[in-house]
Length: 277
Ligand SMILES: NC(=O)c1ccc[n+]([C@@H]2O[C@H](COP(=O)([O-])OP(=O)(O)OC[C@H]3O[C@@H](n4cnc5c(N)ncnc54)[C@H](OP(=O)(O)O)[C@@H]3O)[C@@H](O)[C@H]2O)c1
Image 1 (cartoon, rainbow, N blue to C red):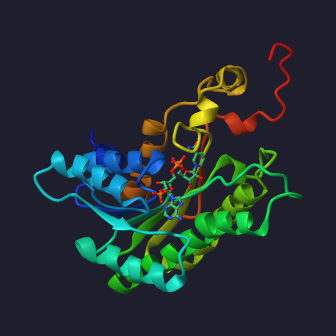
Image 2 (image 1 turned 90 degrees about the vertical axis):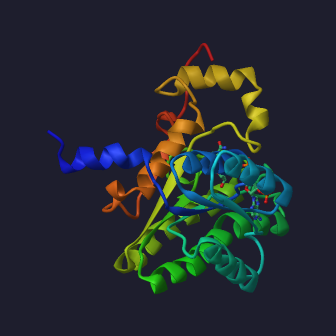
């Protein structure tokens, strides 16, 4: 017997016609989100600063489609408010609406301690990871509200922004992402009346430009095997892409204000007390 739930879940792979704006689309996780969502039938507005990389992404997606399914929009999320507002308008105009905003653009910043990090370094991280995500949500959110169409905003946070594990040299990064988690909840509260849902995903460490060096280290793979409850660090597709598809699809229509931790259980373990490490 096919009930309402199974009908909804079956169509989860099909997000035909949804328009998704992805920031940080030129590399790493953002690029992967774009290709996965294009496969699911979404129209993609791919945003970042490196135009050449966005072009190659859009060429790849459009090359296997009979229509223009992906369009690049150059965007620096750390730019001034009026530039973000104008870029949000431009992005909206590409397909005449945006159903989903994925605030994925982010930087790790350096690894200096809180006593050594400079104000410029702190500001860079906060402008990119927190202020940029807020401003884009604000201007795209206004369009969604005015169009009366609802929407889904998905913020890509991190396990280090949670009240679980902390890491040396991450004072700006972790604080900015912790702020993003709080912003997610307040915006979910305020935008719910407009049927705009706001959720965040807190991933552990997945392969990308940002994490390329750590994945080369043998100790990292050993530690992952020994202390991560699921004994793997996983791959962002399907670990993150599946949650993103869920948050776009109507089967998550009652889900807002959540931080989805996707970490194979890594942030549960605390101090790894393994004499053999
Ligand atoms: N990979 C992981 O393990 C992991 C874990 C937890 C959380 N995250 C989060 O996931 C997101 C993506 O990370 P990633 O690992 O894919 O990093 P990445 O490979 O370094 O890619 C970062 C992306 O963000 C864009 N970006 C950076 N600054 C920007 C700015 N000012 N304006 C617009 N775009 C900007 C970059 O594009 P341009 O340089 O072309 O602008 C690039 O496309 C980040 O928010 C990160 O904090 C990642």
